[in-house]
Amino acid sequence: MKTIAAYKALPIDHPESLLDIDLPIPNPKEHDLLIKVRAVSVNPADYRVRKRITEGSTATILGWDASGVVEKVGALVTEYKSGDKVFYAGDLNRPGCNSEYQLVDARVVGRKPKTIDHAHTAAMPLTSLTAWEAIFERLQLPKAGKPVDQSLLIIGGAGGVGSMAIQLAQFVPGLTVIATASHSESKHWVKDLGAHYIIDHSKDISKQLTVLGYEYVDTILCLNSPDEHWNAICNITAPMGKICGIVPFLKAPDINLLLHKSASFIWEMMFTRTMFQTADITTQRNILNAISEMVDAGSLRSTLKQIIGQINADNLKKAHAQLESNRTIGKLVLEGFNSRSINH
Ligand SMILES: NC(=O)c1ccc[n+]([C@@H]2O[C@H](COP(=O)([O-])OP(=O)(O)OC[C@H]3O[C@@H](n4cnc5c(N)ncnc54)[C@H](OP(=O)(O)O)[C@@H]3O)[C@@H](O)[C@H]2O)c1
Image 1 (tube, protein in one colour):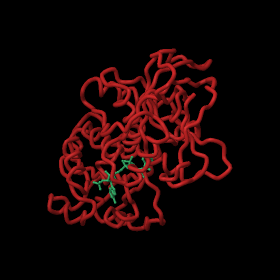
Image 2: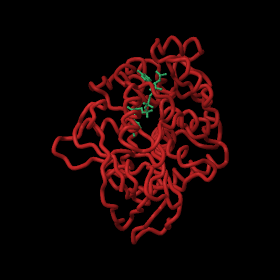
Image 3: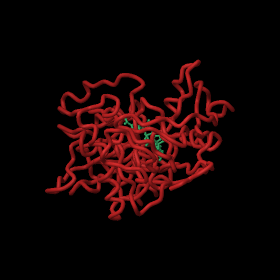
Image 4: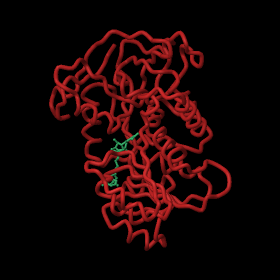
């Protein structure tokens, strides 16, 4: 099977940073699906893992965002059969989706939305799962019920996760969504996704909130550069406020800044469930199925911004380079392998 692999932690413009190789098709274990990958998206996780590869390793297959078709199922799989169209992020500790075929645990795989194609679908799983878990599980904002009359500040609104978070936050009744963006195109993008207010993360966040009439915000989702924003976050958090972070700090933050406000900081890590095989691992399948239904109902849209081309080393290098600029809007997608046979 055609596969794109990395063997060394090399800068993305190095000719051997990613290589086209051929590998045998793997066989599904008990809970696995063997999936024929049709489209993939790229995430910062891809270049973070690429940069950590130790020399002398075997082929590392990156990519944790895909849409495809089930080819074979493992002995314990009851939810899916050959020919089903699915989407998933998968497991950071297993080979990724930059390969014609991939093994994925069926318990974290959802049914592909019927109303969009594989490319638009591949843009969604990892960021939807992250945004969903952050908003509804970590920040505990409700999806329905009485209006909450609260505010949510999303720092890094135009990126992959932010683009899904802005949309999912609109399912919380009564929530005011303030998103940050720093360029005219990214500001336009977050406005179009439904943010109520837009502020610029390269300028004083506190002052801009005051202009909007907010001394404090009730909840904050920090999706980018937490070290840079930590002091501002602590200043603008409401008493008893909740902050969710998804990006590691480069330097340990001063958590004491939150004490007087009895405010809490909580992590969201999308791969926790697969990494620790938690008892509620199937929650990710349920979330993806809910996302799929929302797309088909027209209440959520794909955040695909650009299709780079076919899935090969050259195009993946272009996608990594663009993503490493930290200026990507929405999602970058690659589609099809120019392969010997695509049966579905
Ligand atoms: N813990 C988890 O489970 C998890 C899951 C997914 C992602 N992540 C991490 O979360 C981060 C975001 O992921 P992503 O996929 O959304 O990345 P992305 O798509 O590459 O994010 C790019 C966006 O970040 C914004 N940005 C750049 N510098 C910023 C700054 N200093 N402050 C605020 N925003 C800034 C840019 O907006 P402008 O162009 O408008 O400046 C751009 O639109 C990455 O570090 C990723 O590794 C973690």
